[in-house]
Image (cartoon, rainbow, N blue to C red; front, top):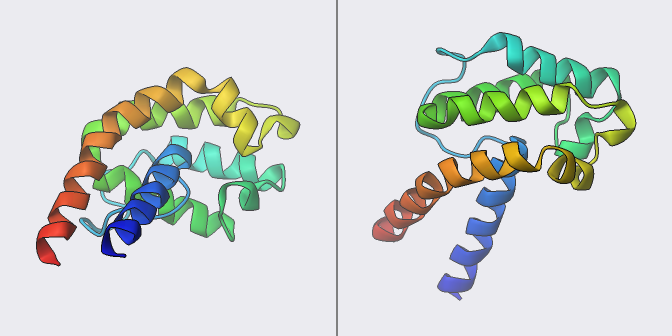
Length: 131
């Protein structure tokens, strides 16, 4: 049961990382050092296209705060995250679905996943030691 729970949690973390949709790690304070321009461009694009819910956001502010939290939580992956956000912000409204994002921004998604996966694995190990 405990292992099933851990595997399920890991899947949720990976999904969150891939789509920058929810806060992943409680390791920093949101807003410090984030690239507000790229985050604003991403969230504005999703809001303008009425696609915030496609990536799990409840509002523009939720999009901004979630992405700032992730940005600050994984600073070693900021370049990959910025590339991903730029790719998403450049898409047409009808292309802003989870499936199309993975297809159209495939290189950026893979680069971000490759960067952030070791961080997610490390976080899982730390949580396992706390159990």
